[in-house]
Image (tube, rainbow, N blue to C red; front, side, top):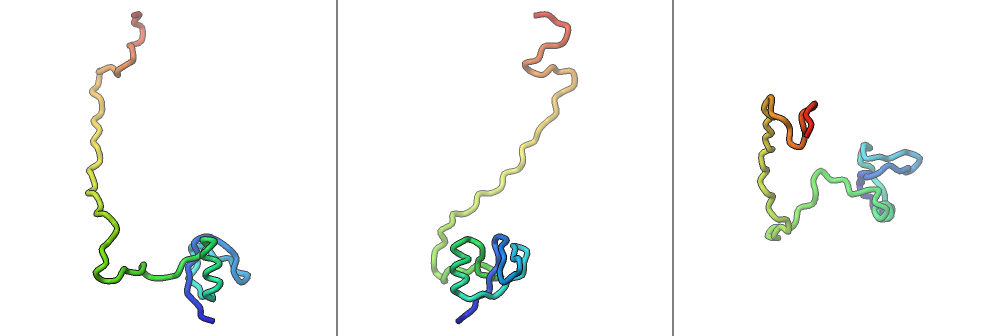
Length: 91
């Protein structure tokens, strides 16, 4: 019976204790891991995700550069807004 170290993805009760995403990683049997993983409650605890073997091309496309935020200029004072008629005028 081998154990694996897992991290909770959602809150659930295990061994009379509530486990949540904020809980520390905890050991469980591999068979229990498969059951909880199927319900999307846990994942293997690791400091970093597993890396593909050397020489394997990445399937991800390169990220696009970040565009600068648009600049908004305030309307000039005294200029009426489009679509609005000034008060008191009859047209």
